[in-house]
Figure 1: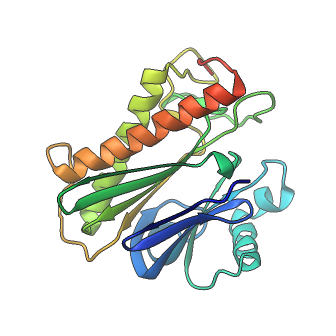
Figure 2 (figure 1 turned 90 degrees about the horizontal axis):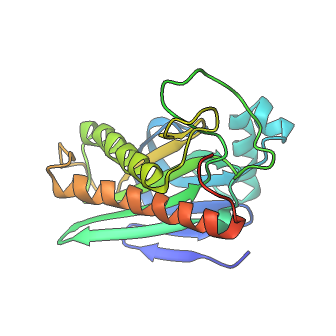
Figure 3 (figure 1 turned 90 degrees about the vertical axis):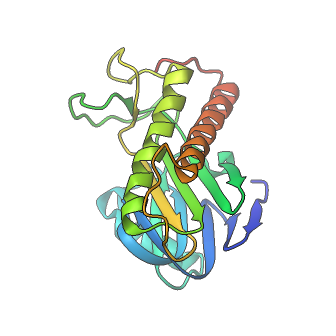
Length: 234
């Protein structure tokens, strides 16, 4: 696996073994539904761990598995933990800025269990299909209030859906346009003390958050299609 390190004002991102590790010089406010420390959390790290759906330890107790994996990496402090079966070597990163507003997005992009929202609940393995899960970590400066962080989840989700739609990705269960996978996760990070109360599409925050999520997923889909030789449509 090629080395990967990115240093930005307020955070550093690097790959180590089968994990993407984003570390902060001081705890930051996060919002996610990560397997470990989801919800609102003051975090020292956000980590995406590469796992196998056949790993019984992970499927039996994902939170305990991630805690153990974090200890193996020597991470101390509060960790927001996410998981994917996508190879972390295919990580995508993009950044956009305007004056003092900056948004960076790190993503792992797979669509083997792509679904359209509202379809019947299912569980399926990904044998012979592209690996699963679209994970997005969006790091935003200056900071957002708690309510704006909630809105940022919506904007990032719309960016993901736009990228899937443009790529023509269909549900793995039907011919409906995919809106995500069955195991996606989004994490929003406010790098400074929260001030902005809104980040909708009429704001520069909203523009950059949506653009970052869209561009990251679009790039990840293109990379996955190019390397796998697979066609779109599930």
